[in-house]
Image (cartoon, rainbow, N blue to C red):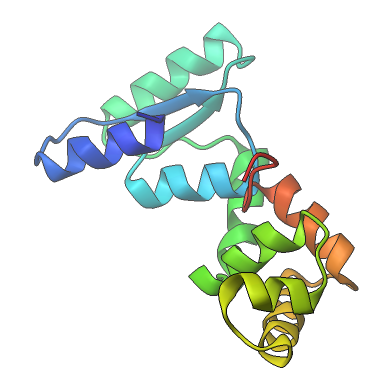
Length: 147
């Protein structure tokens, strides 16, 4: 299981554990998913020992500990409109380079419907074209390169 999946499993089991995510992953989506799952802290593995101790004490006291730079990125992510599952599905295919017609054929929908979804994705991600949408989605952790 991933850290977020483990955290969700803890929550389902009604555990009251206070959790700090310690990770090397720092995409906007990784941070967002961890906090949405209930993490009280989020630290990168290169965090200093002093800051780790401060985070542990803060979270143990019942407060959240998210470093300023991560909190800033989290705030930006929370202000963005979420993509629908279909838009994510189209983004995954889009990142591999097919045309709207090919994507439509693969999903059993019309080329025009794909075009509408692509335009929605471009608008939501605040990018200028489909290539930028795919690269932005990968950079933010919305899709994985292996998808």
